[in-house]
Image (cartoon, helix red, strand yellow):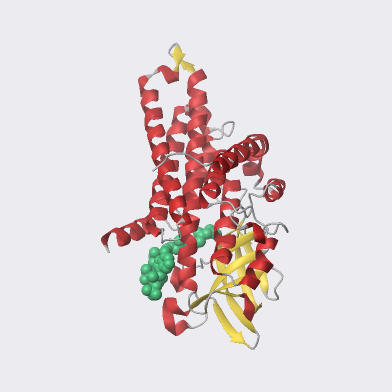
Length: 379
Ligand code: CAA
């Protein structure tokens, strides 16, 4: 076992870190305040090959490995978790399943769109009455000649109202339960595709979340992703990959909060010395450091496991559970370190604390991660 990044992975870290410091960090507070989708940043990330970076080169991507993908999200999320989220969703939840399950024709058609043509991707699984119990969705897909007709609606869709290409899960045979679910590649311009309610959220204000509605939406038969009836497995395996992205995002938030608190503690003088000189503060930083190191190892281990092509469900859920709880603990303690200043929006910690919360909820709540982990270790 070697704890060393490859030259390519180091280069990705350096490039994304510099981009984050110069382009993302300066607008992160404004993005949060205005709830503005960071369109220029995302366009630049397409240009630098970060959007769609895991897509093989022959389909327009950078051909980066999964660990590089996680590192990019970690770096972006240190300054802006919204940007990290947009990238994680696009790469892991939209490009990912097309790479893994797409036919050659689907890969040739859609992956260049999701890279060179700068079209944003999204993933539509959750419904109003099917959140953690993901297989209970009621959206249907009925085959009618050379196309499927989709009806139903999906909620909480990250990238929803800015995305062009969607991975959608729908029931092709209700009587078969999870074996009656199929996956589709849907374009926003297909007839019957509608964008519904835009969500107003506690955090991640720059990451657009909306409802997506299918009203007799016509989807060509050739846009079935994988085999009919195998959609639930595709959703679950895709979420295994997505959860590594959220672990990386949460890790980035924790690192960002840690740095903010440390910068503050070194210059904030109370009782005659910087508060970093008090053992109370020093122990808080020691604990944060240990958590971040552990979270990084779990996240990188999960990303490396993904690249082996073997099932990595346990590694992904472990990393996501640990890092999302780490992000929340670290942001809360970092804010506390900064006292009243941390509670104001003159500092990024209140934003980081709000942004951290979702990592314990989306792509499977912490409770669902515990279900997945215990199921894997006990069976
Ligand atoms: N990989 C491949 N296949 C898997 C799998 C995985 N990780 N997990 C389960 N499956 C397969 C099983 O093998 C089984 O297949 P067979 O029937 O052929 O044996 C089938 O799927 C059903 O498995 P389960 O009986 O375990 O399924 P379940 O209904 O009990 O659900 C669950 C299990 C873990 C609770 C699952 O529903 C789950 O993960 N729920 C959380 C959903 C979730 O994460 N939602 C996030 C939405 S997306 C999002 O947040 C992004 C956004 O845009 C905001």
